[in-house]
Amino acid sequence: MPKSTIFRWLLALILLFFSGLMFRLTLPYLSLDTTVSFLRTKQGILHNKAWYYSFYIHISTSIFVLAAGLTQFSRKILQNYKKIHRWIGKLYVAIILFLAAPSGFIMALYANGGFPAKVSFVFTASLWGIFTYYAYYYIRKGNIQEHREFMWRSYALTLSAITLRIYTYTFPFIFGVHGKELYVAVAWLSWVPNLLCIEYWIKYKNLK
Image 1 (cartoon, rainbow, N blue to C red):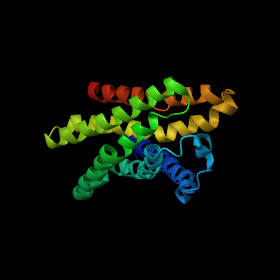
Image 2 (image 1 turned 60 degrees about the vertical axis):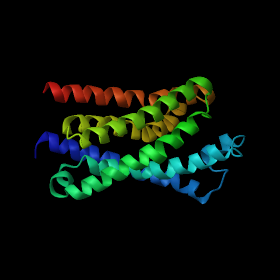
Image 3 (image 1 turned 45 degrees about the vertical axis):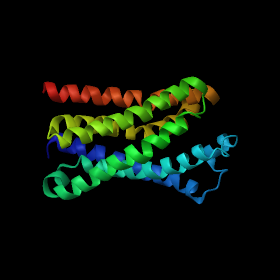
Image 4 (image 1 turned 30 degrees about the vertical axis):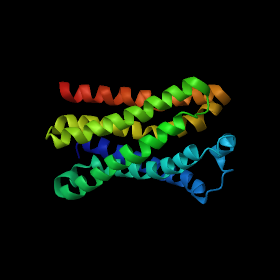
């Protein structure tokens, strides 16, 4: 088996594992208990209906786009089940543009960590929507290469949901970071390295 194939399978398994973990972490919130984990830090904003509904929209849709993104990069699905690829792709785009990104933007305005964290999450939500839109725009124009690259960028930001939680749970133990410093650090680290890695990958693929 070629090394590239082994790498893809390994990456897919890792992403599948963390997507399942994300689903497990999200389940308690679906009980609508407002004292669960992260919501304990947002007691002063729960009365804000825009934030409240945005939170539940965001966490429920993010699980779907994480799983949907995995299928979009499968060569087997793309080659043998093109209709399924298009159908899931359209759902991915619609959910991000009309639900996940807008709700994430509203949540960003009230993010823990103050102004630096808010700016980071506003960037994340905005770029997520922009990259996803251009992925759709280019496939409608028949430009498969640009479509693929913008989908990679979009999914790199989708994965920020996973990287954010990894840093949130590990940084206090590894670096002793807590409170506002933790929120600011993970706000930026959750997506900037993801985007830098995917830009390097795009450049590497194009040069190759």
